[in-house]
Amino acid sequence: MIRGYFITGTDTGVGKTRVAEGLLAAFAQRGLKTVGMKPVASGAAMTAEGLRNEDALALQTAASLSRPYEWVNPYVFAPAIAPHLAAAAAGVEIQLAVIEAAFRKLCEDADMAVVEGVGGWQVPLSITAALPDLARRLDLPVVLVVGLRLGCLNHALLTARAIRADGLKLAGWIANAVDSGFERADANVASLEQRLEAPLLGRLAHASEATSGELAMPLANACERLQASG
Image (cartoon, rainbow, N blue to C red; front, top):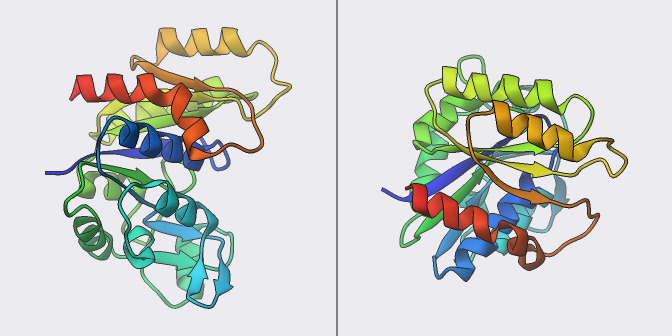
């Protein structure tokens, strides 16, 4: 079974892709063959090759193994709206079996997979499936990205509770400074360390632009801790 992690967040726009890119690069620096996946993406531009999502392209580039875009991002939709709504507008039903099949092909000959979810933890994917169903289907422990901004305590604690209630392992969490003006950031991180009952794997400073290699540096310890925990 491929080793990997499912990256989710306290909300949309909290830096899931940033963290996924950094983890892919950091695992690769440790000698692992890595693949990245964005199973479902809404918000894409038409190119000569078809619809392409910026986050999925970033994961495709950050991985050490080259993989077809269709395996990295099997479901992509143009409008930047909730994925089940985008799928319905396109006359498509998101099927977990299709995603799992792409994941298995993606992971051939790989050592580590980093799979980025869409939106927050409870985002619907179809009438019958939501994001937790996908994480269970892929059988991956979860890494929670906490966007450091007002409200993060409530959002992080509720998300962690939901992850565990859905029967999944919370492998750890990463604090990402999404709001440069957020007051008492250190105190908020300390409060979460006391309450989340999962290890703080890393902390990313606020930055508008950073390469996956630059992101790998503050996440090197995260990879070491994740590998040590099995």
